[in-house]
Image: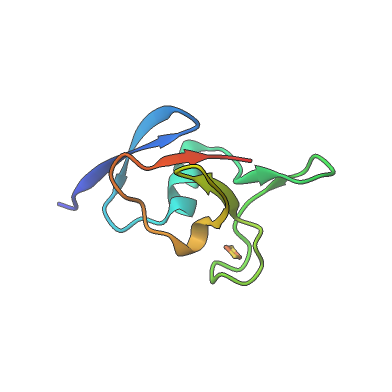
Length: 80
Ligand code: FES
């Protein structure tokens, strides 16, 4: 059985499987990665680090590409 790790998504704790990307954690949480300047919810598009649609704040660092970063224990993920 895969190991689960705890992360915080917008201050709410949740469990994800070890090796999951942050984009997966956000999808499981049911929240968009960010809201565009025109008010549109945004999420992963390319899934390979090119489009930047999946940006979120991770451990206080803004505009991280969530499709390229694996979740770590107690990671603080905030949608923008
Ligand atoms: S989904 Fe395109 S950069 Fe992350």
